[in-house]
Length: 89
Image (cartoon, rainbow, N blue to C red; front, side, top):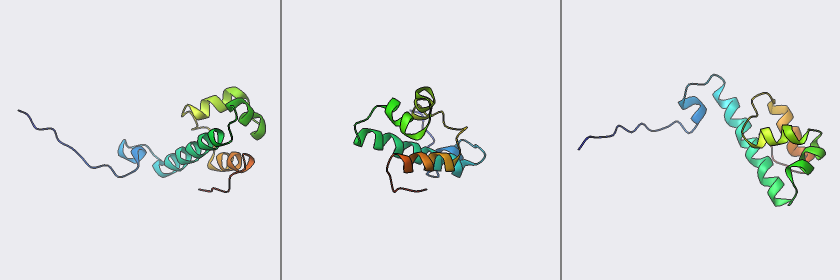
């Protein structure tokens, strides 16, 4: 029976796979998770959330699908504020 080598992660998957700006990517991912949670808590559609924050429904769908690299931390924080959250980075 062969052994499998297991390496403990750092807690930041972006750092573990060697991406530059890993902490920024992780912070953005946390913000997107909060945005998705707020959408669920408020029982609104992603299209309604997009309208509230000034994005197109397609842009909101991309963000919620994990394609948020082109959005800054400031923009994602602004989106949280517009959706009524007091959470920050």
